[in-house]
Length: 193
Figure 1 (cartoon, rainbow, N blue to C red):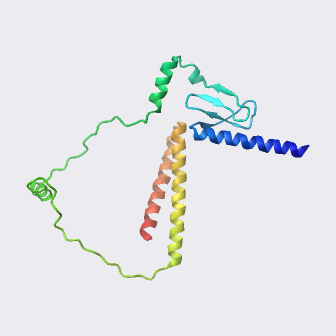
Figure 2 (cartoon, rainbow, N blue to C red):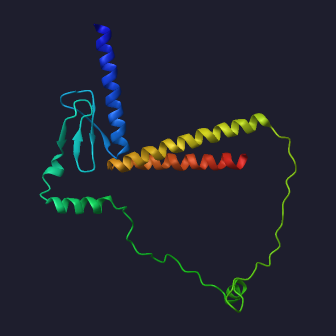
Figure 3 (cartoon, helix red, strand yellow):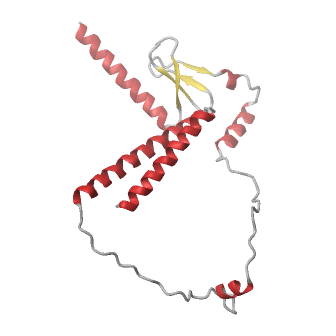
């Protein structure tokens, strides 16, 4: 009897996990709130403001989406506009202009306006063949891998914070500082390899 209950529980939790994964792939967000009837299953929220429990399949509208007072056509227009990518509408501002000497401009372009070939000599530097240290190279490669994974984790956390609408400037600033430090370390490791 107890074994059957455990089998049913594991089957229902597997189907709940599959339903949650399917909703996440469709663009739903997992909330920190749990279902009021199930108590241990997090609620899923759609872009339209629908909250769904994947275990008991109950659905409710959020207060913001119910009380907006828009007609169905206006809501569809609002959703279409909100789904468009947000861009920066600011115009370009000239920060600083540096004057060019006419001799430099003539050196860049020939009389016909075509770009002239550079007249500088290219110096090829040959490095002395150094003794190859396989152990050091493997350690640097492992360090590069770890730094890339750390960078992925930090950018994923930042992405999730932006998607959820969290506006904690201190945490975002610390996260950006960590990303910058990781990039600096990754640059140093890349130069060593």
